[in-house]
Every structure is written in C-alpha cells, then in structure tokens.
Length: 328
Ligand code: NAI
Image (cartoon, rainbow, N blue to C red; front, top):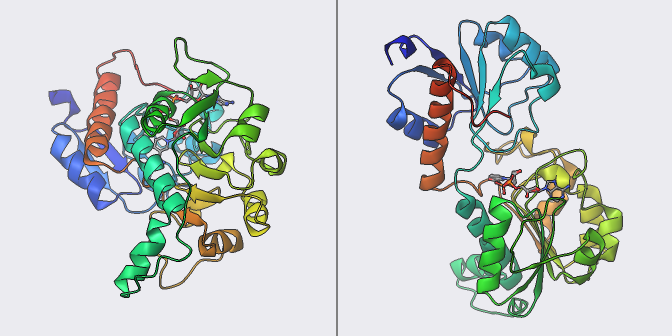
C-alpha cells in the first residue's frame, strides 16, 4: 500500500456521515473533503488529484469530464449505484468510471415500503396531529395492502427485495423488466397491464433513454384513481408536471417520492430559510397525498459502510492495475 500514500482523492458533496465512514475505512489515501458539488464551476480544484469521488447530484457532463482529464485525474469513483449524472461517452477510453453497484438493496426497498405505509395510512398526518394533542382520526383512513396488487418496474436487486416485502404483506406482485429474471414467484406483464391493474406502483429501474418519463401523462391515464406511486429510483422516471396534474384532478391516490427530477438544485441541503423556487416541487410538497423525502432511501449505517469500503476497494484495484469489477 506504500505507493498509495500520495494518491489524493477530491471528495465532493461531502456530508458528515460520508466523512465518518470514509475516515473509518481509509488507511491509504489523502482524502480532501469538499462540501460543494462537482460541476463546471468547481472542477478547477481537481488539479493535483488522481481521483474524484462523486455522488448522485454531482454533474459530470462532457465539459466536466474533459476538464478532469485535462487536470490529470485518473479515475472517477462514484459512491453510488446510478450513473446517469456522468457523460459516459465523454469518459469512454479516457477516464474509467467505477461505482458501487449494490450497497444495500434492503435499505432502499425497506424505505420504499416505509413510504408506502406512511402515505397509505397517513402516519405523517397522525404524527403532526398528536404533537399538537389533536387525537381526532377523521380523514386518516387508508386501504389494506393485503390482497392488493403491486406493480414493480425493474426487478433487479432492489425491486426483488421490494417484491418480497410486499408479498410478506399478502400483496400480489406484477412486474415489468425487459430482462426478466428466471424462476420467480411473481408475474411479468407488459407495462400497459401493470399500469391498469396495480394498486401500488413502485419504480426500481435505472434512468435510461428508455425509462425517462416511463410514468408520463399517458401511463397515468391508465392507472386506477386510487393508485399510489412510489419512486425511490430517479426523479426523471416520472413526468412531474403530469403527476401533479393527476393528483390535483384526483386521478391518482398519492405519490411517495424520494427522488425528484430537478432535485439537484435542492436535495441534501437546508433551504428552510430562503425557500425554493421550483413551483412543481412546491405544489407537490403541499399536497396532502404526497410525501417527499430528500433522496434518503439508501441512508442506513450498513449501506454507508459498504459505500465507503467498496469505493476505496475500487480505487485500490485501479491503482494496483487489477480488473475493475465495478467499472461502468
Ligand atoms: P439493478 O441494476 O440491480 O436493477 C435494475 C433493473 O432494472 C434490472 O433488472 C434491469 O433489467 C431493469 N431495467 C433496465 N431497463 C429497464 C426498463 N426499460 N424498464 C424496466 N426495467 C428496466 O439496480 P438496483 O440496485 O435494483 O437499483 C435500481 C435503481 O435504484 C438504481 O438504478 C438507482 O436509480 C436507484 N437507487 C436509488 C437509491 C436511493 O437512495 N433513492 C439508492 C440506490 C439505488
């Protein structure tokens, strides 16, 4: 490990929990933690670093990737699973990109169920009521999940765990995935049927050209008026304006959103003083049947530890000239 001593990592969008786990797992590298995000304005500071460590809302567009290469950065180490924020075409054959493909599918799937239970049974409202000694339960009725149909889009690691959890609640599971898994105890259907038959729809696919706005106006028009949509994957899977219209027109039961298509402007930061200027997010947040959380589905101690150890292992593999098993 001696030759690793001088390897410098520029760590962007740092939060206290990142620093806690990376410091605990790091023995070999000099990590400089920056609170700001990596983007065109900040990429200049990467000169003199061999690695950048980035998260979901760092913007590694073509210009940023070009600048990283020019600055002599040798590796982009994402400490997340998704990589839609990196221009892979710009990076190809110039700078490798590694990621943490799975740090805890349980963290995300359990959170998705938490959102569903909270929204469906209006636990967020009861919490607020009883804090003000209001013990009235009018308007807090939900639906039994037992015997209801859940439609899961994307049956990878997280989607499969989520289906298991739903089956534990006695739900019937339908799923759509262009690469279906074998030997499953749920039913693959086309998207049209999934939209029409599901009482709950949960998104667990990556953001790609094919999946962008998979939940759009037309898809929503096929759904039942009480359907609850849960999105813990990526904001741009849902056309937010169409979602807002449907919720305002009472054509949907509710939406639980841990991600939002324009989240990079706000999520992970405290905007309680200055407020926000995104009218759609403002309106969504204000609706009684919408629950917005700030991209926290991954946030368990187990996941944070895995993120730190796998990211540092990816970096060690690169500098040891080993094959990069987590290259994007
Ligand atoms: P995975 O790679 O194991 O599974 C993704 C599944 O989506 C695969 O089975 C794939 O075949 C399927 N898929 C690909 N194209 C599709 C399409 N057009 N339609 C439907 N399905 C399609 O990924 P994993 O670990 O299950 O993660 C899923 C997503 O969860 C990630 O892409 C990421 O966006 C999100 N995520 C969110 C987190 C959060 O904190 N909110 C944390 C971690 C991941």
